[in-house]
Image (cartoon, rainbow, N blue to C red; front, side, top):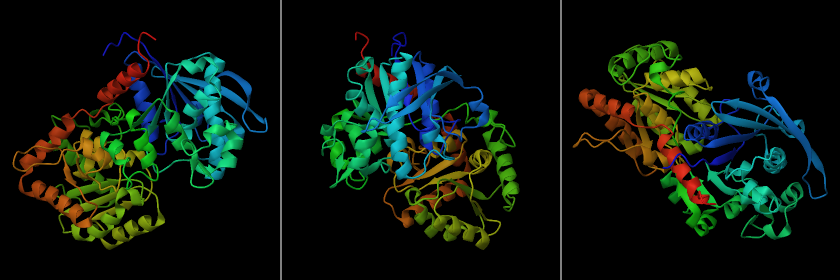
Length: 490
């Protein structure tokens, strides 16, 4: 790839680490722009200026200007402020409006979120025009920014931005921004012709914002090759499979990476003992013992410790975990859970901790430091998802020498090679059909290797740590895609 050909890219999305993050989207919005900046790309990120962004970042934002913007069908206009923050070679521009972004959390409910992200999509494009910063590529993320490609080709068709190309990335197809047509027509003032079955319309009277963005984007990407195929099927397509099949010619799958500076066991201040591939076999034991002490588990370096770091929802395969967990507690195995979510799963894991005190610890919270220590102290990480567009936890686990046990779906299938006992190859344990018996079998295969052939297990730990899970390869693929969309001669 010719890195001398500079490309300008703006990322538009609803969250970004470290300012505000609720899931993997926040990680991607931080790590991918940073990796592209290192590849001689000119990168800008546009975000809402939520009140929940920590003061230490708010205080360093610089005012870049403001204007009033027509938004609604009845001509109602809104204030748009632009506050800028520069960090690690990336320019972050925050759209400032207290009426839309004064809530404590970035997402509240559709009644409030639909107007908020209609406003944000148009304000992001208007801010680019205001700053006279016309990018080669406008890269939008999930339904919250999915109106950007639509507005780019309609409301902004006669502006300098009409020369920009658009990409829309699906991080999780389950969330689509569906609401009634009159409301979305009011808050966007888009022309009537886009509210048809090929663009917005779904069902009898609803508009689907993600569907419209997919129709108008020049390229659609999603966060793994397997997921790109899965979402064209009825089971994974969440009602959009036919629409996606229609636009499959512009669909690409590019697996995510992780920030290997943020996730580095050799330079991680959150760990009790740092380690790398050379000393992992000894120093990981120290982290295991420290984790057992921290969580009130029986301290024994020979126990097989399984970690589960997840949102506690149906998507994550927790019904399977509930079925198999009692059978795992055999005197040689410990289970550590970290996360929050559905009350049913929160209560079930609290029950397991009470029932198997000293062998199960359920941390119903999210604690970044504890997550790091679980990655470092566990022997294996469980990711038995019903569906998983990409997944980051299995990549982090491998970076920390923790063997992933995953279901073969989405990015889990693309990143975890199943262990082959005959050739001693692979970097994890997998199962295919969504059945508790198959999950139980995968865990037992991992335990068997751990307890009966530790030297082969240790080789797998080192293979995992040696695997490149950084953003380098994926960012290169995105850059190639940008060049394909906007060739150098244009």
